[in-house]
Image 1: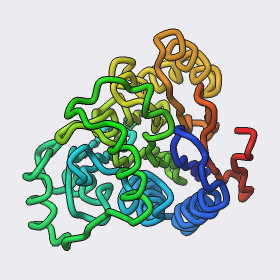
Image 2: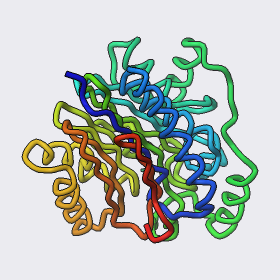
Image 3: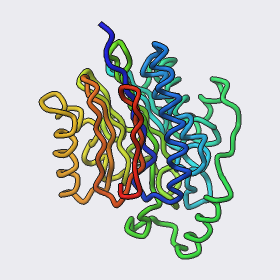
Length: 296
Ligand code: GLY
């Protein structure tokens, strides 16, 4: 029996600057993913395609338009997972256009789950990914402004950087009931070179199993401590998606973890919650699109 199809994407929980540009990017991303699902395609293709669109939309902190690290370079994290527990990820990868596609190549073409740093970039080149500088003038300006105020070489206080972290992600369920989740991020503005966040850590930024799939966004260090994506999916085994999300977000809030989550359960129930001031998101289910408003 054909299952219900659905897709949800987020553009991060670190503040909604340029809401119209975000909304346009998210609409385009979920529509591209939904078109794949409607034609009978896989949730893996749909989630990857949605994240590619978001990585290519420079308003988001992922792919082109990622925040710069303390040294003025872009180092990106990405992961992808399917509900049959296949997983692939890259951490601190440089100079590629679509880290999520490299994560998928790690999943499908290697025996490993996670490749990091210059060897992740080298792997991407071996797989045919061309050189691409993801820095944009807009993010270089933000980096310069912030850097002037912070000359130290150590990243000590996250509070200074509120609004300067972010992620994109997508979760989809296809007509065969397969669920896939994908997440991609430039990390935190002015992070230490080599810093890897929650995004490529299985169970932290991304998780999927037969009960559901989740992509998380927010402060990576705390999300890793919470194993946030796994926690939500594990709760989904026993309760409805929104209830699972509410419990996990309440636990995260008690632990001072600033975050947002999107997810889809095996019954195609949608989940979208955050404890930050705002989060941008968009989904399509039953052919109907819904999205964030400025109040989110
Ligand atoms: N959640 C994105 C990061 O902290 O790297």
